[in-house]
Amino acid sequence: MSQRSAIPSTLADALWRIYRRPDPAPLWERGGNLPWNDPAFSARMLREHLDESHGAASRVAAERAAQLEWLWARLGLSPGSRVLDLTCGPGLYAVPLAGRGCHVTGVDFGPAAIAHARRLAAEAGVAERCVFIEADVRDYQPPAGAFDAALFLYGQLAVFPRAEAAALLRKVAGALRPGGRLCVELLDPARVDKADSSWWFTDDKGLWGDRPFLHLGERRWDEAERTSVERYLILHLESGHLDEIILCDQTYAVEEMTELMRASGFATVAAYPAWDGVALYDAEEWVVYLAEC
Ligand SMILES: C[S@@+](CC[C@H](N)C(=O)[O-])C[C@H]1O[C@@H](n2cnc3c(N)ncnc32)[C@H](O)[C@@H]1O
Picture 1 (cartoon, rainbow, N blue to C red):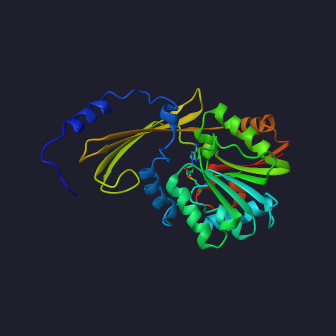
Picture 2: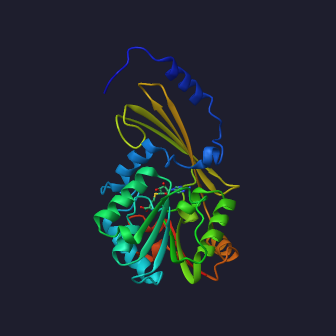
Picture 3: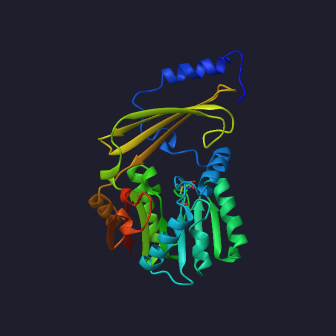
């Protein structure tokens, strides 16, 4: 690890900014999400998506295979089905679905993730059945009634405030044909850690930077909004630059999400706790919704 003999003034300024941080961490500040669309962060995050030693960014291959079997049956997919994968990441679900004959449109605003998805599709020889769009899902305008099924996996509908999530659900309902189905995976509110906590660690290289950094994290639960709020302060030791990230996770009771989906244009909604028994390391933490237009 490299070391500095004197503390740069930027580092001292950053320490004061940490000391003076707003407390409690404000909800939804700077979007309330990880900087997925920052090119450098996206490139570092891609390493995590592809790291088979953990399932933090994308689940590991064996678990994805089990999920894909479930999705294939429950979404009623068959070769030729048109599937919309919202927040598709590096295409680890979209490309296998295209491999089974589906026509898949993946939308994600992570540049490295989308580039990887396109590469993967080309390598698998299914590029002609895949369209990967680099865009914020809130801006993407799907053609009306163009899809048989849609995916919104790994909790990503929860990183938006309620009103934005409702608008997204209405948009997906409009993009599906009558009888089309949506699968949404959301954290089970009963399993969300509601205790305040904080942590720190240092590293030379990882998700938060490629040079020595100090990561300071804190988590709180906002009871009024039923939202988990995490704040990450990343102090880059050589430059003194400070990254401040706030990640909000909106939780939904099953009754609330069911009602929201119905109000958004879905005729029937079924909720499956614990991933309906699919063998995932963290299955107990999730509720999977199947909504049909
Ligand atoms: C936890 S990863 C899951 C990716 C993929 N579904 C998987 O399981 O492999 C979350 C993904 O959501 C994307 N994402 C988050 N917010 C987004 C937004 N507003 N618009 C588009 N993509 C978004 C990120 O870029 C990231 O690729």
